[in-house]
Image (cartoon, rainbow, N blue to C red; front, top):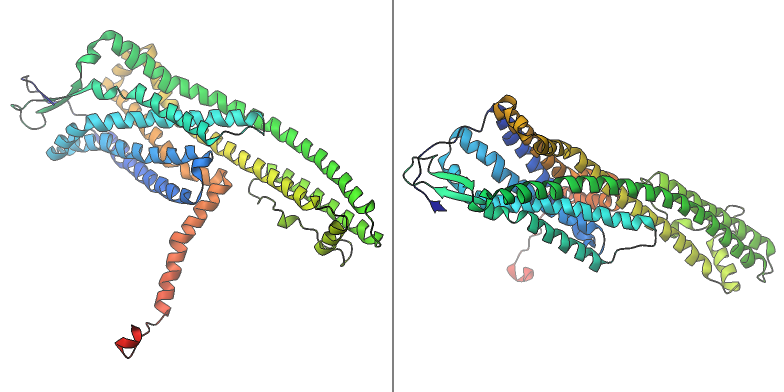
Length: 446
């Protein structure tokens, strides 16, 4: 805080009824919902190994969203409240913490945007070939680069703000937030504050996400078609193995071997159909090795024990392993598809909610005087407020997107909700039905 001896002047009012409804009422409700949902999401992630999977991006994004929503409420609604209702205590507190909270909020917003770009880039690389996987060490390296870039791009906001104190002035005029000496340089203000930040924080992430999302979906469609053809080839090869197993092995009951062969072939066809249906309908559960066991299709004597006896007589235990490998491959493809769908929905919401911010930034590039002249500057303030509310809404409603698109996250959320609400209600009912056990003497209790 710098004490200056300047003329006392009160800033013009910044709050009106529309801004109070949009920022204070709607913005605060959205941020509160976002804090609750993201906290619930973080608690649901506790049973998952997020630090060794791509869910680490979603985990860190939920943490950043909570902090961004807190910073939003401390900056925008608080400033309008003290300006509209003339709360001196809030006026003083806001001017003291605004420099720190604004810097933290800017860094967190930049980090969350770059985190989505990093997750999209990883998903694009993995979508080129099904065998490509990112190691946790490489993922941590990407995340470190993301936070370093965000701190580099937005950390200088702290040195661009300056709090001035005017002790000789009355309340609501004795504190003033102004730009520091470093911003008075035209080259710094034009090149760094406007051009570099607008390009690297608005334009570049927007178009990178747009391109990476399109390329990832295209690669995923190609992998789906190639993967289904590989399933057909693999099923044919496994059928040949079955023929050698059932007909070339010595067994006195040749009819039983034929029944076993037909049963196993039907199971392989069932596996193939499940993989195909799982690719088109992600809401169906993934096949497990236990669910692929043979059933008595031809006669009651053809059971899984018959298959085991034939397999042991042939001294070949490859069938359960092959079945398990196919089911695991289907589950892996399903998880990769769920991750891609989740990220695609996340990117789509980001693009939609940041379109207005992109248009405002473009107008600031082309002709900033036009925005300032519309409605004596109030139109520009309304558009900027609406852009802020849209941006913060994208951080608040990510849990429904995860719940709809990702089966693993959906299962964890349901389990956590069941353990929080249903189990607590059952414990209360059980406590009401259970009578306390009393003892006639203290010695018997001890």
